[in-house]
Length: 328
Image (cartoon, rainbow, N blue to C red; front, side, top):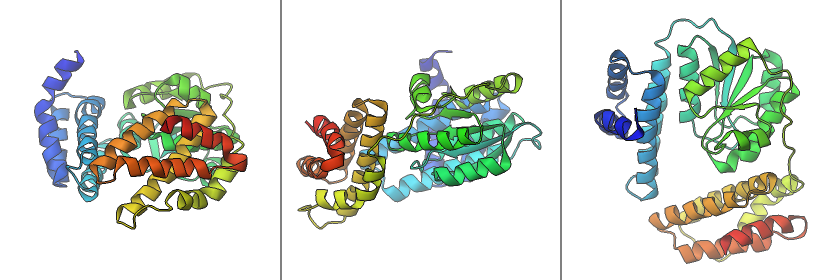
């Protein structure tokens, strides 16, 4: 069935789901999903053609200022609760143990919840660790439990360096990594981070893990090492952000912009690590659009970004150059 046909087919379900989630009505959302399952719609299709488009709509409405942060959080929490309930309808799992987690720095849970639910419904024992577990703690957990594989989600570019760190931790205890999420984008980027296989959807994740049950990877992909600026960026982050905000009006948005600048530093690290300056370009374009919608003047934002780049001196000059080229 074509994408247009799918959009038409599930239009009513998306509308009902969106209304339920904005109101935090998980019971109604669960009934909508259950009706789909009863009609023979697979879990994967519910995620791909109902929940994911609804989540994107919520994100767009937040970016355009139509929804507040609290509204978006209510809806996201309802989606997560819905996925938990759907996974709980499965029989007791008897398959291989898969640890599911998002990359350090990624607090988005929809993708990994969907994968965890799909694995559970397919008989795998899914151990859901949640979002943004630091790489050292993740490595210790994997070393102790020795799961069959790690399913790693990475939905935002600011977490790409974290995904590389999580992969190094898993490989350090001989656990293969299956990656997914919008920030990984494709198998090529995932492989460059050291991830052993890429899955764009929960169904692809199940298929890849089934293949590994037959033939587990004999040799793990070499994980990318941290860039030389990694420690300096971490150590000087608060100082750099403070310098960038010098002269920024004392307003409620100041704290939010400070958080955004922290993500910009992580984006710059990822761009250098992968040698993909366009990662910064894409993020700054998004940041300008959303900041304007939330009352932050674009000229002021660009001045703040230039301050950030200018503060990157000494061992961070390369990072500053990457950022300056994207600011324009």
